[in-house]
Image (cartoon, rainbow, N blue to C red; front, side):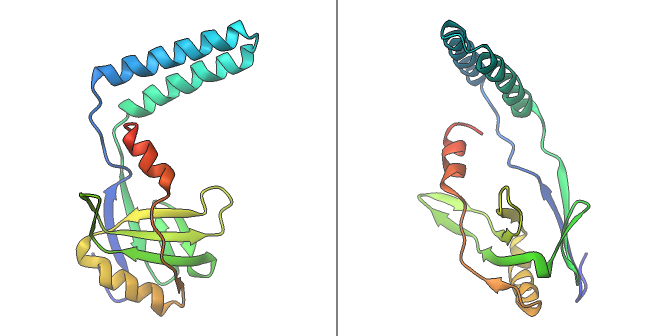
Length: 161
């Protein structure tokens, strides 16, 4: 659904991964062992934090990703019901599909915002919209600055997240 003022698309909020039951067993063993170690050292609060964190990690690992609606319009980038105004976007980068260490990297829009927590985030985009999105961001005087996924995302991916 597109016109000259609006580009809209939908994508899964994250890439769904099938996890083998061994992954959950490993998570459980790590959480129980580290919690017991924390208890042995008398750090009960940390033990509780580890248990709650482990349970939440397991719950989020099972959760299916939601379909997210994105829209680039005359005001800014709308993600679900939140809008990032062009004036509040410090920079952007449109990653074209590329190959990185044998893995195909899908097209993505990177946004550098004024948020304190996670100031740079990426949005999956459709390959057919790469040029349109790029031109629309430039037309609204948003600074183009090369960005790529944070190394921590690669580490999390290697760990199965």
